[in-house]
Length: 161
Ligand code: THU
Image (cartoon, rainbow, N blue to C red; front, side, top):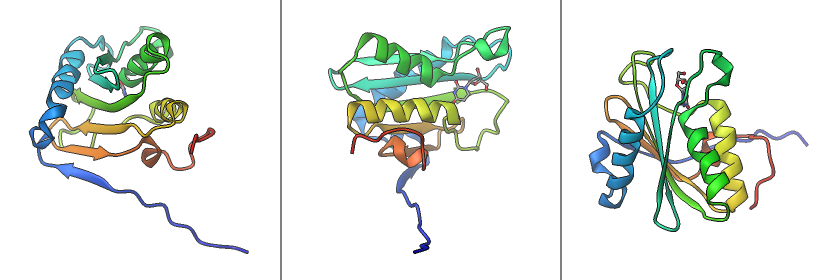
């Protein structure tokens, strides 16, 4: 039988990240600091990612570019791959992403690239627990989703649930 399906998800939209619960503020601060340490001489677009782990630690990444362009890596993947390498078995509760640069209009929603979404989905499926994602625009407008799977409908992989 042919059916028509709908994919829906909820997200929160805040006019400024400072409206996030105060428990998130340290994570946001770390994401901004990581952004400042990004190596992005080619795009001049600096991205910071900070992950809050279930053990209370905050682990950061930032984009690391390379003169041989495909050899660079996005901030989210730097953070998630570092966590996979050094904290296997420790769940990621929230991932916060920030960016600055002329590549994107200031008021445009900052959301992870497709490749990073796939890697984020793998982390979520691997830990069997949703990862909340906080995305902060250059104008500080903030969007929060409660799971990576909401950002990647029909993502490739085996969901744990
Ligand atoms: N970038 C990220 O770090 N994360 C994304 O989700 C998208 C793009 C980086 C890659 C490159 O260094 C720069 O931003 C411009 O694309």
